[in-house]
Image (tube, rainbow, N blue to C red; front, side, top):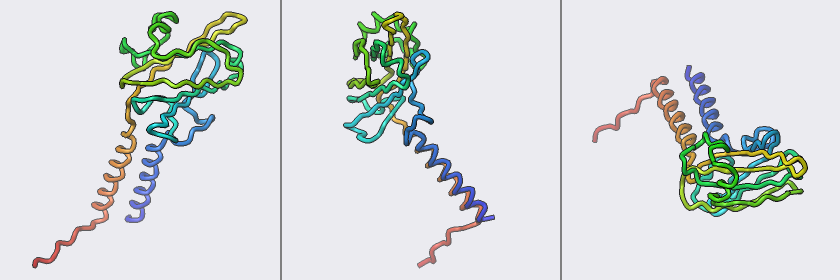
Length: 198
């Protein structure tokens, strides 16, 4: 019975550790950092070298500070389009439900943008920009791609948080390990021996 319990504890510990490090290595096959621009896709990577030199993030920006954001076009069709990128503060409290229609159109987005990369073509398929965030909260990234031949315009809107800490998976893993350790200790019948009286 004891070996069985130790096996379960080991398996659950490994499972909890895996859950806590789910955003480790990023690959194209398993990448959750894929940005959809209509039918096209781009890989989104973010960095904050001042605080987390080697850590890549994809959804939320952990620190209120400067960031480096890199978009790599997966679909080559985007390389021939005029691509514009803006970041606006989420003053309407749209949060994760934000859509392009909620933002008042491209002119409104440009006027209220904290950062705007004007429309240009990127023949190498990479855009790098460096926004500076001074307040924690929700922000909205807007990427607009215009086909210069047809005039077709497509948008991608992605809300994100700045100044958030994702420590809960580690705390959850720690709590699971501690609970299972206590359960194992109780079930194996081990008791602390009282120290002899002096």
